[in-house]
Length: 326
Image (tube, rainbow, N blue to C red):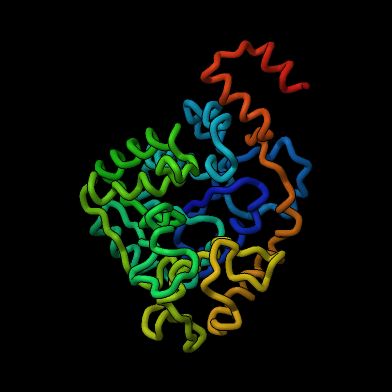
């Protein structure tokens, strides 16, 4: 059995819903779970708008040092840091599951994941690189940016149940407990640099260069879309398996991604239809409703800074409370 999951806070439930719908349409045999790094019970939520997929709240997987992680991380860091802990939970609590796939919530599945399934029969871990050919301009992102943020993109990673995979997850959990920060000056960009070690530390790790996997703004310079018989293809021959809409905002529908300046819709008419599809799916799945919810686990910046200071200065809690109230 194959299980796929994503991670998000309540404000990203429209994206998670859209991912689940696309996975169900293309791969109905794959079980899908939304890992929620948030709490539902504390919010006044319209229950009719919730995705019709199992939601597993993070407090239910019993991460040992979760409170400390909440004090340490912002919302992006926290949603990333719990990723290996969910893998660990599924490995230990779902013995019927053979393969586990993680997708970022801002992904749509466009095809049967047969290629991935076949690779998971031969490999313990499957990852995808950001790019497979060099950039030839001075736009953003650059190859230097890839050095800073990681060679592989961990909006997707898949594992086959094995002793090696469990060792990798244990190691990854240990690293992300305290070192899942966006801190480029110290060589950290959430989980991605740690994952650069996977092919070195662990056996049977596939770096899959299939152009149909994890197509996104960072590799659009090398991948072009066409459609034949209502099926999407990359560079005319490779079936598009999943597209990663990282940095796309329906509030700015004329921008491919807020993280780049290389690609525009005016220059790339081929990608306009799948972005229109994504925008419509998000609206259908109540993105305008969900986007304004605040995550319960993220403290205001002032409180978070003071908690970090207290870790080193050992401020008494009473003094910390007075400072916060001032």
